[in-house]
Length: 597
Ligand code: DGT
Ligand code: CA
Ligand code: CA
Ligand code: ZN
Image (cartoon, rainbow, N blue to C red; front, side, top):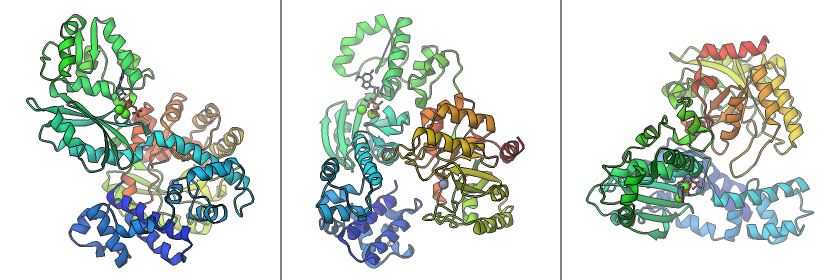
């Protein structure tokens, strides 16, 4: 999240507090409007405040402006704090429960005196929430789920929340004069979708003292609590309650250390046995002939690896050498989960993982016609600026009323609009599509005679995401069976740490998708990342083609594809497995093949 987006969250919280208090709606609407403005990732708030240029953002009133300035300058705002302290703090925490909004919280508070998640949980267990207006048994079940998922979420944080904290801290460490280089390691380097704790590794320049680095690390902005701090490592907790481990190693063994601390544990265990088979020892300081290592083990351990001679190591300075000296092709971090990657590397048969520049087009995005923030032409220009060759405009279909889903007449008009605009941007093809809803029974939200007029169709489930496996299977199979459906968008509807989504019989879905020529999406927007890595991997194995789409609702959103790429890489995807790594004629061929099947 950018600074602007973080402050947007604060404004959303303030709007919610006003609603919980039962204030007139116009007050909370004003804050919500500011939050929406600040959501734009391209806003550089620090810069605007520094230049005293907040006025350039239309629609922000004087009091909101001063709150923004306080947050940017001091990281806090008295107005925010006094509003927050006007209701029990547990109520604000309840806002983090998926599916629980200010109105529900106000109802529980007013009618049942509930002031915290714990009280909510026990009221639920004791059946005390029955009989409240608008709170049926289904809603209660959903609440219980939300509370359970939250317990899990507290131990592992979604990657979308970790990335920006990680880069801020990493920049801090890289800025220390004693540090030669620094990188993230652990599960974040492997790009797992949730992170237990954040690991950072720093290489110490020769002749410096590591404790200078660890000490300074504990004073970086955002650090709330110091858990441990010694000459070679420090552990802290951030304001956002994330644990961060820093390790400081000599540059001479940086490669071995980053290999070791990237993990996974299972991958490293396999790698160490491979070393042993070769009479070698692999550890965080290097790869050694076992006899050499035994002669120096005590010194290394006594000095924590600082100030010793690494020249006899088989490999230690460069990570790639570790793999090479174990007769392995280099294994990308995303693959290091002991899912067969070591065996493939030994045979030099690792996939050439997809990279961002392989993507040639965007197949799923929204405009102002539904719930997006930019026009067709603005989206197309932004896509071109990112180096893409084509973009498919896929606004929501009519059932998505909250998202201003298009009635057939408006879609027909949009077809005309796109036809008129296509060709206006050199090098960019604009296609008209739709993100058509897959209704609970698998029927689609538009008739075939509408769908057939489109260039490309994304079909996605948005509602009834808690139906049982059998119904979910039938639902998706029916959508896949439609000749005009080219990709299933966010196939499960899951949200990381919030909602499990559909759990169909995947082997049947994959088989049908493969046989019919229907792609499956990796939706790159956080917290969706749907399909996830495991399912995407299984889909590829079953012969399916995937897409990597941003589902952008703004021009900035079109650039937010990296987590989607990460999921695809963890799935072992090559460019050839990804539909939108193909050319515009590949896309047209994909559509035509299914229609004429
Ligand atoms: P996380 O934090 O749960 O998301 O997952 P990781 O993989 O980041 O795990 P973490 O933070 O415990 O350790 C980072 C890496 O360091 C891990 O992937 C492998 C390595 N490592 C740490 N401690 C040990 C250990 O005691 N034994 C072994 N073999 N490896 C370790
Ligand atoms: Ca970790
Ligand atoms: Ca750790
Ligand atoms: Zn969408």
